Length: 272
Ligand SMILES: [Zn+2]
View (tube, helix red, strand yellow):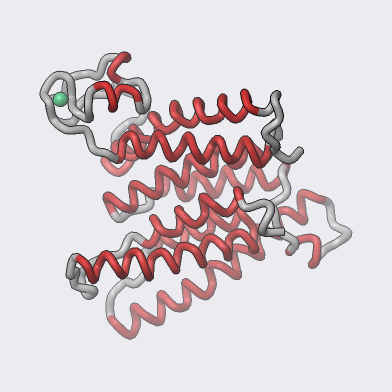
């Protein structure tokens, strides 16, 4: 079923947007707590400045930020703009997934994928790390999904047209992993051998594997291309504008990769 804005479809997209706001609110907790090795379940949300627990009416996604004008009710400390941006972007991505995939199991897979990407985007941007909980955890979940929902790639079909669907799907994920990860890994090794410093962290390799098992080869290539272009022009432009030293400044490559990957499942009309 391909999404169309028919009368009965609008409530579903609206529901997905609302779910995106709530999941986005939870992702804010993950983005703050996972790099600090804190539980994402307990305790309930608190202000990192004054430690005061945040009441439910001050914790409504997007609206509380607007009502409080971006400040903690207790101490007045400003709430980072990333909080509403996380909620808003998750909501928009969820709405697009619902629009493209309708009421299907595939939509569930892409909701989860987008949520992982939003968290990784911000954690890499703020902390320059890509936590294993999200990369390795995501790879495991992606492989389970690959059994039931075909990885969107022609690779498996081309290589083994007579195999069972689940096998073709896993083969597509494997082909994507090798093609996407191998050149980056070799380049990274060569670079660190020549320059005597790490070019790519292990986190980037795990992120590429995560993209491979969810997206397959064609969309995985699209994601890395968008990520590389974004890193070069936006990241490079930022470094020039702020006069960062390329020898010491670490570009959040994972952030750009996540941005490219978040678009990849939504372009169903353009990527066959
Ligand atoms: Zn406070």
